[in-house]
Image (cartoon, rainbow over all chains, first blue to last red; front, side, top):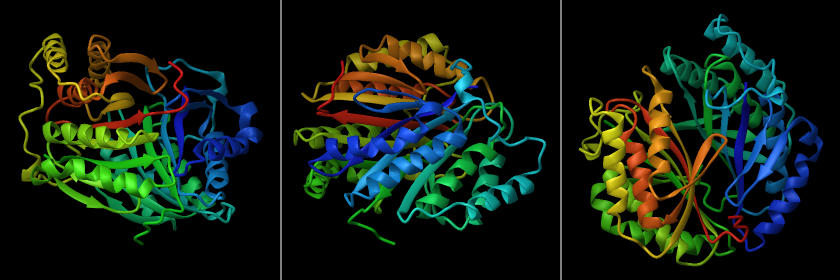
Length: 203
Length: 203
């Protein structure tokens, strides 16, 4: 299995380079479990979901704590058939597809309830894509039902779903959505935007 | 059919609000063919791909011409089974699935060759997702082969492909990738990032 993300941090300030470099230090405790490569558009982070999402949470919280308007953008993927297996990605976090949707939803809700708070609010929106055979929309609708009961649901928008809350439960919600829906051997991706300190909060 | 995008413009400057509001004027000539709604995370643009991509190109060029480091982020979708049909989205731009891959690739290349230049460079990376039954990877690989012959190909990365060139041919390349691969009645999405004036150009 191959899993990871292309991520970018967008600080809306003249000192965007300073905000990015200082925030990246938040990844240090996770670096031995991840492989990280950077170019001018994004940073590739390769690793299993249960390391990736807490690492992204810590990066987001560090950037948000600068009080600038900052956006974290991630293209996450697991199981892409075009990518080679990689030992660093081995994981036990993916759901058993034999397990009924209801049980997976309840397990996801329990994980979110157990998440520690960080003190920073995260306003996120994301799209979850389940590729290949099978009824991909059944998994998507199952995931949306979990989101509505997660405690972090904000609202559905065209093409995506908004979640809101403390960054701790929000990133756990995102991790659960990514891991527990869609087959474990399948190709699942997530297009994720997390926004901090926007001056145009509408609700 | 329902088609459109959730888009965001991220200017890396203290005057990000000024850059966003001045750039949005570039959408004015397209507004009668699009439906536009904004919140604090993104702007929804509903309309057919042949209007959407030129409108995004003009928005990008306006933002890039400020010379600030600016990123345009888009989550594009067509044919999502969860969205209602909408007359504003009706389009003739989608390929005939009976047409062989080779013919679709050649038609796409001809469109890119005919695109007018804008004077602004666009560095883009994107992922194309083809959902539902059928061999979704065959369409993805067919699209990648087109990209390699488009004149805008930069390189493959994990989870995405980079394209580079003048914004005119680059946005036409993106439009062709979105329209000509994957079935016309299918659910196809694109996760797109276009970057201007980055201080950390690596090649």
